[in-house]
Image (spheres, rainbow, N blue to C red):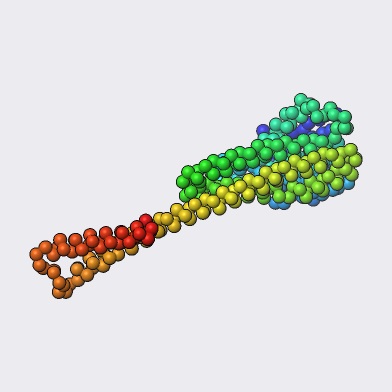
Length: 311
């Protein structure tokens, strides 16, 4: 499998590396005069997003939620909940590195090879535009995934009000985990894109400023979807907990009333089972007398419970 792919259009070069080796990174560093610090960053994953401006290029790290998270698919053991992409954006080159196959990048590279229509617009084509369309495509696919999370919440709502509160405790926990993972992966994008907006204007000129701010707008839509789903989830979880609490209280109430009704019967049974001399015990019909007494007491206790609306 080819881990390094290179695409060219006009004087722009896009190099995409999957799980880059030390030798590949060293060669890139020589070809594009990359600092040693960046070479080290490219070889191993980073925990946090970042944006650094260097003479002649911009270095960005962004994390994106894994697509399986949005769709609630089962995750492989030890699999990370996000995918990292490192971007090195120069005037006439773009380098992307990642540590596993990312479908969006793979599909976009195919489009790049057949010259998409956005390459022919009036604004001078540059590496910044390639970065813009990569991230925009990633956000578009995330939007579809967040719509799916919303549909999962709708199904959970139906189940909650259909009496499936207990089953929904686990289902809602799974949805919450997925949303938390998405929030974690995307939480630093705003600061990174703001830094890119300032650096991009400096690198590509004033006419370029529309593109990074458009990305900020796309990110804002994604974050709003996350917050909307989060608010819906919180309301739904609170409703589920309330209904579950009411249901539990009803069960406890029924058990308590049942114990109240049958307590006198238990007391009568214990009294007449005492190993001592008791009235009526041993006389003819003593069993039926005790049985009748228990029936009368049971009827009285049941009537009392009904009159007090405990049942």
